[in-house]
Image 1 (cartoon, chains in turn yellow, purple):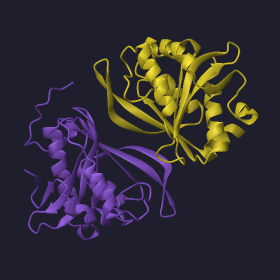
Image 2 (cartoon, helix red, strand yellow; image 1 turned 180 degrees about the vertical axis):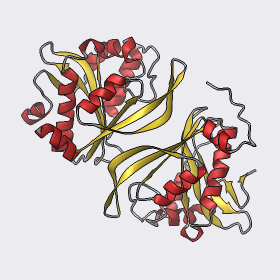
Image 3 (cartoon, helix red, strand yellow; image 1 turned 90 degrees about the vertical axis):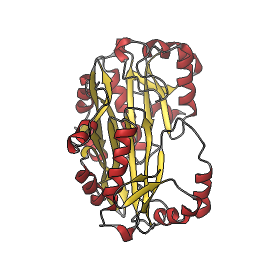
Image 4 (tube, chains in turn brown, orange; image 1 turned 45 degrees about the vertical axis):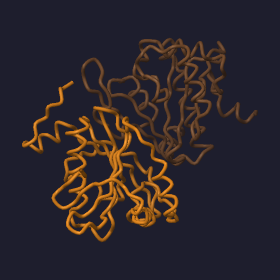
Length: 188
Length: 188
């Protein structure tokens, strides 16, 4: 347990398993207008419609039962409060897992995201066989694109017509980082 | 009526096709999968998969045998999966080696694309392959697909690392290539 705690801990955040009691905070931040279209929740639940508490419970249940995936709560250490979620899916191949990270908008631009991403990447590159860690975001999500690039990810392509937003088609931007690239970023 | 091209038809799978499908999956060159599958599939496995398909009027996939119109020889297998109605779909194809280079893959894809754009009204058709399969990339480009996403070093096959590649074909690009067709789907 001590080893696990250290792997998933950083200076200001730690990642832990979700518990049923987390449903209220999850329900609240997923409904924040700023997260519309970028919730990173199971495909079967809307990414933009208002979510009920029952749907938030269903998300936690799906995450708890998911195979070859993990979904962890991001907790701010000083408040001991859940401020977001970190996902990882290696169902296709553990060589190239896919990750996503969501923080409640009140906690953006305070360094929590960087710490959570560093924990995720350290875990995947130091404790699993991951070689390429990938992710993605809508093309309009400029903050996420910049965040990924700041942390060593490269844009690997554009899947066209991934969605519709404000009357216009949107594309999906894929990003990835290779183990040697991450080692270079970490060593810099 | 089966979907027909000049030289091929796409028809439903039948129990007597199972051994042909086994042979396609058990040949490392034709199995068309971005992770090598163990070449030990059996007719029983395919028959079970075939028999477990359930009737529905709300389908999100289609699976077809590609057959020669002239000789009724079995040529290959083509499918679409993950249909998001009136939005997008992903296709896949396997061709028996003796028909490689005959143009049957391109013709079968043309027949399927016509069905997907004209009958199902999708706006994007996608496919996945990898850089170790230039034949697939070349056939798709010949049809009008464009490379959209390239995840680096994420496929390991035949002792080598390849990039995972996604290609897409937009509705307006398709109709521009076939001026004899008129796109009557309301624009978004």
